[in-house]
Structures are given as structure tokens and as C-alpha cells.
Image 1 (cartoon, one colour):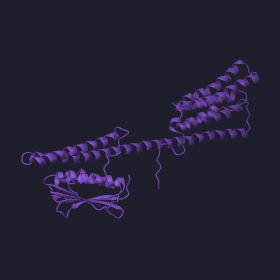
Image 2 (cartoon, rainbow, N blue to C red):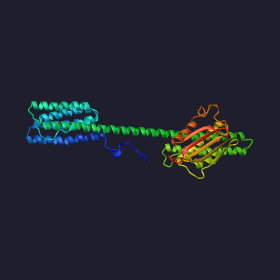
Image 3 (cartoon, rainbow, N blue to C red):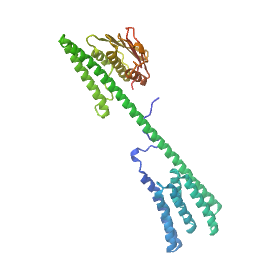
Image 4 (cartoon, rainbow, N blue to C red):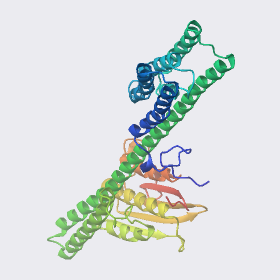
Length: 394
């Protein structure tokens, strides 16, 4: 089943991230809408009914107070809805019973619920609505029961809209948090991968340089030609190691021409095996693939496993020979490394001798769904057997 790359945004939000308006701009929308509706209506009603300057200015002030109070809803959503509810109550009881509703109250309710001030919103609106009905009856305002019911339903609808937007907001925050966790996990995996590559490349190279340099020093006087061959091997090994280290570090520096991983494939195995040969130690490569080529990820893992196994042989096995064999068994690539050294000794396969190298080989294979087994070899030393999915590509 194909995996869709997720960019961290909720699936119901199709807007590109760069086109999302900042929170301050979003908050200005209800303020401006409330002013555009309430202020012209207050002025028009005052002029139409000729209420006089004092009452007209009071109507205008109430029309402005509610919308401007919404500016504080981002930091103080609770007190804001209380102030707007009081302004809506005063507007309802003092002005002419005509004109558009006090829509700033609807915005205040929605913003308060979205920001978690539900208790403030419920108490403020219920108190203001009960006070409006009670005081309206005292001062002689008579409202039809249908109007009261409709207003109650509309206020409840504002709470519903606020709850819906709050849930949507929480879901978006969860998606963003999950995206951040995935990015962090991916970065940690990449750091581990780069550390493993550096361990394999540098560890193998230094082991070979140490062995070949020791051989060169030992044969410098007795056999200058063999010493020269050992020093040439040191030069070639160090050159190859530097190239692979640059390749790995190029990924960290984001160099455009750096490959995503060192170019280690099965075709490089003969060179790897030849590089570990030295006087007193022979290495042989046996290719039973008959030209078949596995997936790139399988090739890369097989190369690194062989490299680590040969490094362990050179460092610890005190062997005189090793054989690296690759073959295909069904849907698996199998690579076997045998040596005639001291083996695992009394520590056993899973004992202290199983250090970070063997653990790293097993991790590489496990990442592709394969496995690595370490045990005694028919040659008298240790056998490392890796089974990898043949078609693994990533």
C-alpha cells in the first residue's frame, strides 16, 4: 500500500502554510464586521427617531464598546465576553427596539469558547439574558415568546460554533505536535545512520591502516618490496576512507552534489576483500549470484556487514584467512563471512565479545527485515551470516 507523505497539516486544511494569516489579522475580522454593522445602525436609528444628542451619543458609544472590547479576547477572553455581554444588555434596554442584533456578543461567545473560557461565557451570557428578560418586564418592554426562543437558540448556536472551532483547533495542534515528533524522530534516525556509517568507514580504515603499517614496519629491512606493497595499501585505504567520510559529511552540510549515502555496492566487495589482504592473512571473495543484482538497500547493507565482519576478523580473530561469499536463496540475499581464527572463545556468541560491531550489523539487517547470525565456522573460527530481503531498496 503506498504511503502518502504528510506535511504536518490536518487533512481538512488545504491551504499552504505561507498563506495563513497571522493571529492578529484574524482577530481584526470580527472587530471590523461588528463595527460595520453596529455603528452605522446606531447612527441611522438615532437620526431616524431623533433621539437627541445625549441618547444618540450613548447609543453610538455602546455600538463601539462591544467591537473594541473584542481586541482583548486573545489575552483575556473571559473578561471580554463579560464586558460585551454587559454592553449588549445596556444596548437592548436603553435603545429603540429596532435594528440589527448586537453581533459583537456572538463573536465574543465564539472567541471565549475557542480559547477555553467556557465558564466565563456561560455565566456572562446567562446572567445578561436573564437580566434582560427580568429588567425588560420591569421597565415595560414586552417581547414575544417566539423572539425570546429564537434569541436563546441563536445564543446556544454561538456556543456550538465555538465548541466546533475549539475541537478543530485542538486537532490541528495535535497534528502539528505529531509532525514535530515525527521530524525529531527522523532527525534522530538520520544521526544514528550517519554515526553508524562513520563508525564502519573509519573503523575499517583504521584497522587496515594499522595492520598494513605494522606489516610495513616489520618487513622494512627484510623485504622492502613487501613493505612498499603494504604502504601502498595504507595509501589506498586512507584515500578510500577519506572519500567515504566526505560523502557522509556532505549530507550533513547539505551539499547539492553529495550522494545521500556512500556508494557501497556488491560490486565493491572484491576491492574490499583485496584491501584486507596482507602477509600472513589471505582473504577470498566467492560470488555465487551469477550476475543477479539485488536491491540497492540490500547491496549497501551487505557491503557494510561484510566490512564490519572483516574489520572484526582483522582486529580480534588472529586468523590467517577469511572467505566472503554471496548468494541468492529464494527471495533473500545471503552473505557469509568465515574465518579460521580464534572464534568467539569462552564468551559465547551472545557474550561480551558481541560488541557494537555485531550489534550494528544486526541493526542494519533488522531495518530491512533481515537478520544476522553469528556462530562457529566450519573453518574453525567464526561465521557471520546475513540474510537480507532481495528486493530491498530503501
